[in-house]
Image (tube, rainbow, N blue to C red; front, side, top):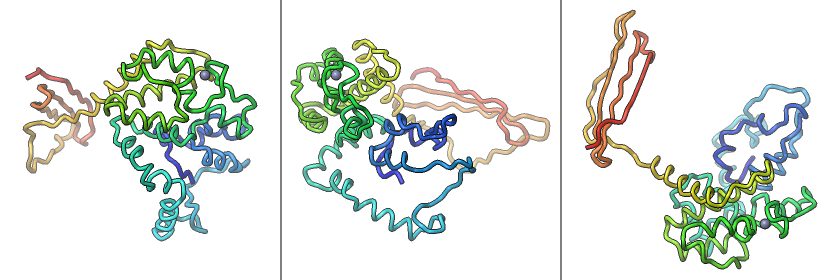
Length: 302
Ligand SMILES: [Zn+2]
């Protein structure tokens, strides 16, 4: 069972995507990248069947493999009292950072990235070398220093070039932080929430850039990465705006299908007074209620 948060991509991922179909073995590089180290090692130790049996859902915590509420309750209690969760969420000193991190208005995959970076569980070369997966713990980007998390996203010359072109408060800071967590806690005291969100997006982009260098050798120029961070946040914030029509239809209208061999078109328009805009849409359905065509468009500003 995976005990630690995973990225949104991994949540959508099928187990078969973690298995090399040709070699019939776990795709260790992807697993190490996507899961916390203990989970990743546990996954890679699972023997793969040679019979290529059909997948089925099995609950690990009962002998029969069938889920029961009782076993679910006991498992949940066990997870909640596991040391790693207690350390990250219960101690008084540690509470503030998680409270701030989870409150940031950024996609959850970025918060998980911040959480993993703060726990030093990103697959840096130092981490992989410690576990004998790599021989060399030097940074792939500068090829000079050991790559810890703080080096990869802050200290490395490649990262510093990017921060130098970033928002003003992030350009002037010293690079002497012991780890990512102490950097983040320091930033919490100095930056506004919006600036902290920008920092997390930028750090995440730098981490992805470092991965891109490892896999394809392409290094994007710092200016592009800075612009991308701004665009990323702007796109996310725009997508969070909830449009609420000022006057909607209410009541007990029930749609009825048209007679056989006929089609029915329904259309409507709405005014979003908060956003000073409007929109309209139409849908055509057949006698079975199946959608034949649909459209929606933004209307005039108001
Ligand atoms: Zn470096």
